[in-house]
Length: 284
Image 1 (cartoon, rainbow, N blue to C red):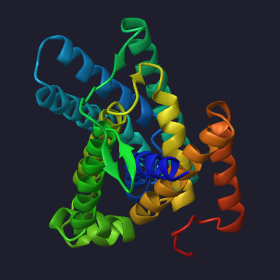
Image 2: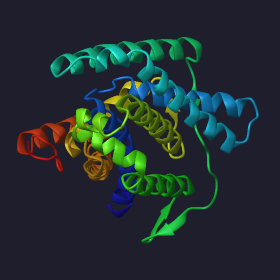
Image 3: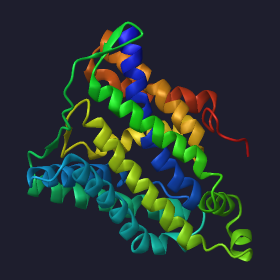
Image 4: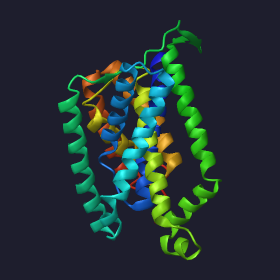
């Protein structure tokens, strides 16, 4: 039981980063990026290819982060431009259609080119005792990286770019009037979202393999976490991620891995019924 909860926290922190990447883009531009999981897998394949070429692990990990950020920036600078010109439901619907198309394209290309592609960042070493439970070194590394990134995200709000992003979220027209460029801010957030997607794939690979077909699974998990936490709420995404991570591991332990996604979807549905705006979502 205790081991399952610790594993759930490790998994939940990764869920939280997934949800943050999704919710940042939605909060800023009103767009749900359905290609998010495929961007994560693309970054993972870049890491795997770079490692196969003989590059050091840190260099390969850096290449994966750059691939995630660059792909997201290209998406923002091209297909998202007509989306941002729309308002309300039209923006949401067009964004869904275009990013879903991008997801299928990336998924198809990766599956065609690397049908057996897998990333596994094996980190050796003896298990480390934590609260009387032996934790794998890979799990500890994944936890440390996730916590460090979470702290950076919390500090980001106090920076000039962070305040600019918050201003655009609150009032895009007002932000433009005080000299903030919403397009530049959106590009920055898209780049951050892509970097987070890549980081999740890399930390996930420290504990279990990330396959070339994992894209839609990542996207579904990101959507569940973002909805449960409250769309547009970073702290809510982390809280939801940790809670859902624990639920996922306990469900896998007591019921079976095959039904875990159904349990997570049920948790999301229950949250929507009880708190339609999410755990930490603000009232309108």
